[in-house]
Length: 148
Image (cartoon, rainbow, N blue to C red; front, side, top):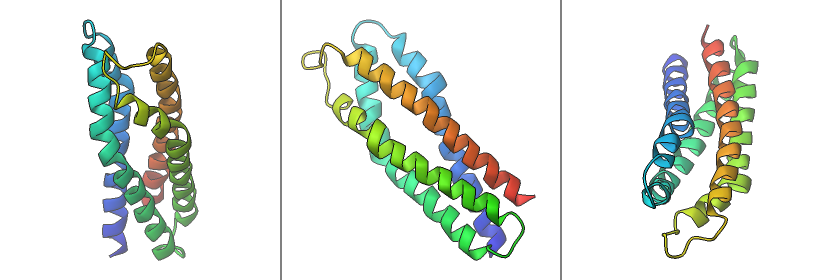
């Protein structure tokens, strides 16, 4: 049973890393290259869509990691799993304090009501997101290392 938990947790966190990596390094560049207001509208739509899904994914990843840490406490790699869970806690805290407030504003913007500093706010979100991606990549790496 522990093996199944380890695999499921690693896959769930790995998929989350893939989505967030794609947002950071692919989707945002695509959206920023769109003409006129299309990019901003795309960012708002992405904020609504992923903003509804990602909280469950982040919390789910954290819960799975915590269960793995407890269930595998006396097994090899438990310290790595605990550290990964700590990094996932950090990613959730970062999200709540830094990224979600910007995203909550962004997802309501249209070309008619967006603030004059909307691009600066999106760039700030990007900078925080790059750091969060690094944190969850590190957590994923630790989970993979705990498997061997």
